[in-house]
Length: 302
Image (tube, rainbow, N blue to C red; front, top):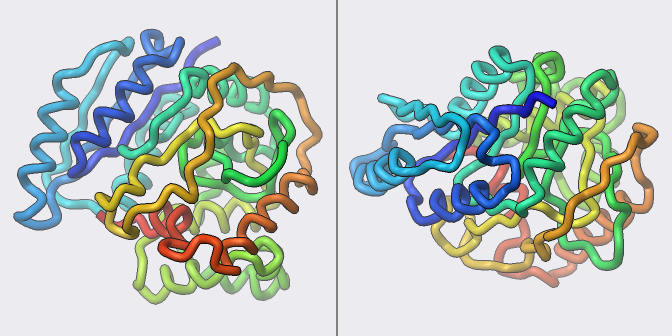
């Protein structure tokens, strides 16, 4: 099996970047995988030192088949950098695994991603493979599908990435015309449509809300693990969009995931548990940062 290249986007958090890379190095397929690292340029003078520290660190690492570092000479912002970087690498290699600099992975993350990419490559209904799942109560299936796409440790193929629609207004209009807003918002439990509207208004610069909407409207599905293979460590007050919280941190899966050929439809059991999780946030069980997972991931602003 030909392994997918890994693409990592870093900015001004060298410690977080180090945790992300050290976790990747512990993956059993790391030494056989190519790693591309995109380092965005500082947005402001105050970011210069940390950006340089992150760059110095990534130039020091090993443990992969090949490492290529792309240092931006201008600040692209996370959304533009990801869209450009993903497009360039997936067009060259045909498939891709994508991470950001605050995502710590299970030692079995790369195996799960590559197994999923291999098994569902020819499925016209599967748009991506995803490594994170919310810390819902109770058990989930070992793997399952949900309509749409996601952004915390994900993988896709060249032909599926072509479905990405950058025009947020076009996406929102189609959701309204097809009367899909409620389902897009997980039956009203989280207002993804509001986030898309804010992107259109220029109040955020999210690539991922457009990726989710693009996949959802094309009736495409993403494979998820029942136990999260990704842990976000950016909820320590260092990120742009939230203070400190552990409410979105699952227990990291430390065993291999058995991927089987499933029917590509919404798993209603998993969907119900996620909707219940979102409802709990609305009820105030998470007070300090109820929008952390979505906002941090989908605003895409350095």
